Amino acid sequence: MSRTRVPVVAGWFTGEGDGFRLLGTRCADCGSVFFPREDTACRNPGCGGQDLAEVPLSRRGRVWSYTDGRYRPPAPYVSDPERAWEPYTLVAVELAAERMVVLGQAAHGVTPAELAVGMEVEVTSGVLNEDAETTWMTWHFRPVVEEEAS
Ligand SMILES: [Zn+2]
Image (cartoon, rainbow, N blue to C red; front, side, top):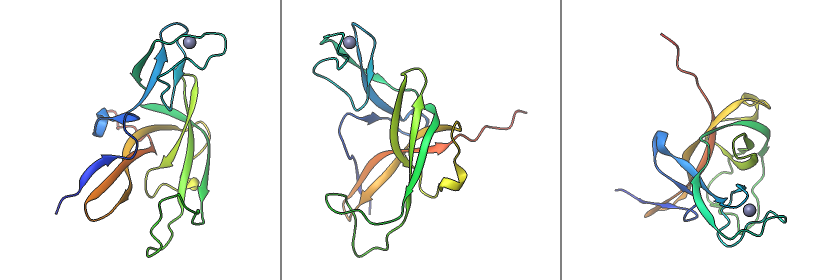
């Protein structure tokens, strides 16, 4: 049976495969980019702009910092008590063009031992949680594997 794939937060990301992108907003007046998206007013205290347009964020960035979660966090974190707790890796990624750092989980199976500050990573779609009917989609980061030049 197939589950319905639902974004865990509407409007924060779009696309599939190589077309997957996080979505932020950019201020038309000062050019500041926001993620999570800011749709009301520019948060640059020197700006005051209110014209914010949706923009896809860079697909690749560099590891700024990382850590792992080894214990089950309390509610409202979604966690099935019937299932064994699996440690996960959190990574903060610096996007050069947007001049910002975005936080996310590393792709399933990527451990801190495989990461290093400055390493190039890319955003990818990932599964946050699922039940019988629904798969909640989120974003993950994974190390960039360069194709062999031929
Ligand atoms: Zn602005």
